[in-house]
Length: 243
Image (cartoon, rainbow, N blue to C red; front, side, top):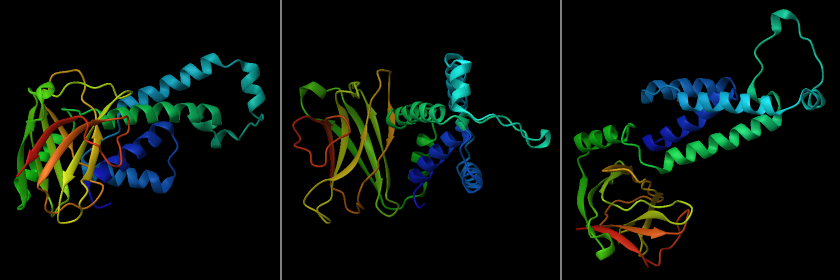
């Protein structure tokens, strides 16, 4: 994978599989490599969730139902091993669904204790083509909003630092970034959907441009429907950073 964001996302995906006991040999090896490259370890919250799910499911399942789902088999003593959470398919699916919800939540909500601020500092220190612009509020409803955006076209990497952006309910509305680059298209490039929690900022948010952006002249934050949109009508613009 080329970008650090993609490797971080892949590590999170593999880590969920690790917590579920669902990695094959090649995936386990990939998890180990990414762990060393990114300086990360397994997320203990995933282990706790997987254990809690298994305990909850087993507690609520009668011996008769468990017996009806399995075929009795007594392996030789030497080959016996702990039963994986995925030994019962319905337990695995339930755990995977819950872990997916947790991973999505972690991806959408900015985490000031994560590696993201460090990666931002690394970009500042090493990028030679850094674009740095200040956000200004778009209208009275967002007059307290502030922050900045950093972008490197050579590395296709960037970050927003946002202050005083009102918290949103992800089930109703989500923030979305748009990058204006006239050199590539008349339409703004989708820079990713994100949420702001109801705790004090500032928040550092990685930019996830869907297309290559080399000469941006503006970055626009809008408030859209859950999941974002393909083309924004810009009916609710929150903030703008421009040359």
